[in-house]
Image 1 (cartoon, rainbow, N blue to C red):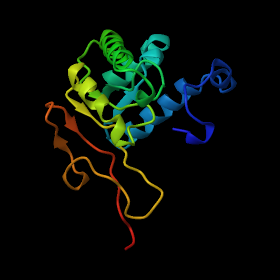
Image 2 (tube, rainbow, N blue to C red):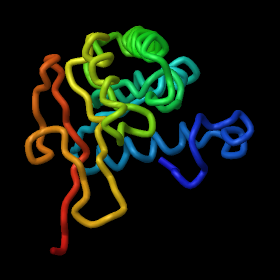
Image 3 (cartoon, rainbow, N blue to C red):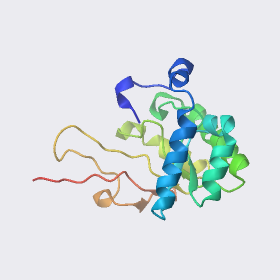
Image 4 (cartoon, rainbow, N blue to C red):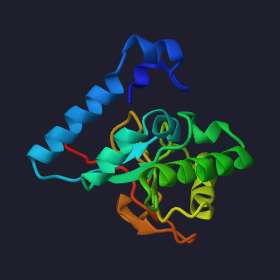
Length: 173
């Protein structure tokens, strides 16, 4: 994530400047993981899966979990419930078609950072995902993180969806 560039999906011009960076970076990451006998969850855009299905198949064949990051890199909180539901459905179907395996996890593009965006968790559960890791209560003030689960720990929500908030640690008091 490069949050210095602002919000919204990368433009074709931005992507083309870097050439085959996706392929190179994924292969480098897969090598590092293999060298350390480590498996990872890869949050993938359906648009990437459509353009480079071989990359996702390779990652999956090496034992890594493929989870959804949506169809396009657009914030969920700026969209309607219908748009989000359609995006979740199509991204999951695309990824499952590419890797030939059920996709159970999701992480929202740009995360979910405000309570006003929590409606999206219901959409994620309704789309059939079993778990989510989108809540990032990052604030730029010490000790101001807002938790939606007890102590910021993983928890099952009323919808049945497991939420794994991104971890935040307080280093100094």
